[in-house]
Amino acid sequence: MTRPLALVGAASSIGIRPYDDGEVRQLSRAPDVLRERGLIHRLEATDLGDVVPPPYRDYVRPPKRARNEEEVIVYSRSLAQRVAAATAHERFALVLGGDCSIVLGCLVGAKRTAGGPVGLVYVDAHADFATPDESRTGSVASMSLALASGRGESPLSRLSGRTPLVEGKHIALVGRRDAGQPWYGHAALAASAILDLPDAELLAHDVGELVAALLRRVTADGLEGFWIQLDADVLNPAVMSAVDSPEPGGLMPSELVQLLAPLVRHPLALGLSLTTYDPAFDADRSGARQLVRLLEALLVSSRTVAQPA
Image (cartoon, rainbow, N blue to C red; front, side):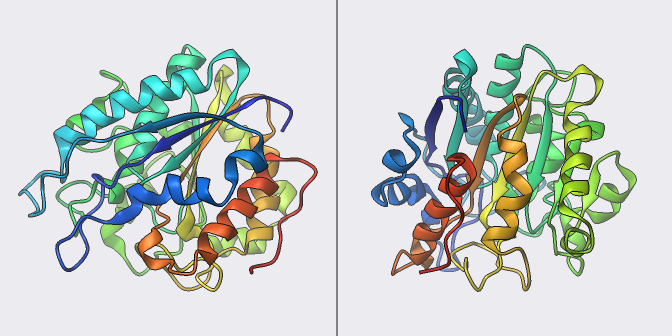
C-alpha cells in the first residue's frame, strides 16, 4: 500500500441480534481489541477514532421491521461523515467493525468522496440478501447486501435517496457457503444483476481470472471508486471461529490475501470494512492476532501472511 492509510472504528453491534441469553453482542469491542494487538503501529495508520452508535433498543424483534432500524439509519449517517474524512486526500480507509450493517455508512461516505456511483466487493460466508420479512433474526446484518443494493421496503434501502447505494451490476458477492440457508435471499440474489462467486467457485478458478472479473465489475461504466466489505466469517473456522455464524469450509488467510491484495492496491479502491469478529468468542485473542496479520499482509506490501499462532 503506497497511499496513506486512515483507520476508523465502527464500534457497533446494533445491526445484529443479541446473544441467546439476551445480552448485546460484543462486536463493538473489536476495534479496541485489534488496536491492542498493535494494529495501528504495524500498518503505520492514522487513527481517526471510533464512531459510537446509539443504544441497542430492539432486544425483542419488531414485526415486519429490522432490529434497531432508526438507530442504524442515524449511525450510518454518522459513520459516513467519518468515512468521507478517512477517504479524503487520496487516503485508503480501513474501517473496523462491528457488525455487517456498517457497510451502509461506509458506502454513503465512499460515494461522497467519489462524487458519484461506486462499486462493491462483498466478501462473506453468507449472501446477506434477505428482506425484513425473509430474515430469521431481523438483524440488519443479515440484510446488508440487499439494503445496499436497494432491495426491500426499509428506509435503510434508500439511504442514498431514490437510487440504491450500489447498483447490482456493480456488485460482486464473494465466498458465500450458505447454500442450505435460502432465508438469506438466494432466490432474489439469483435473479439480480449481482456477480455471485460462491466459495466452491473460488477454489475452482484461477486467482488471476477471479481478480480480473471482480475488477471489471467494480470499475465498469466509469465508476470513480469501489469499496471492499470483508466479513471475518469468510475465513475457515479452523483459523477464525470468533464469529457470529461460522460455516464449514472457507478460505485460509493466505488464499484470502492472494485474492484481495490486488483489489486493495488498485487506485480506485476507496477502503475496506472488516466485520463480525467477536472478542467474546476469542478468549486467547488468537483470532485477533490472525486478523492483524491478515490486515498487515493486505495493506503493507512487503509482508506475507503468517501462519496461525
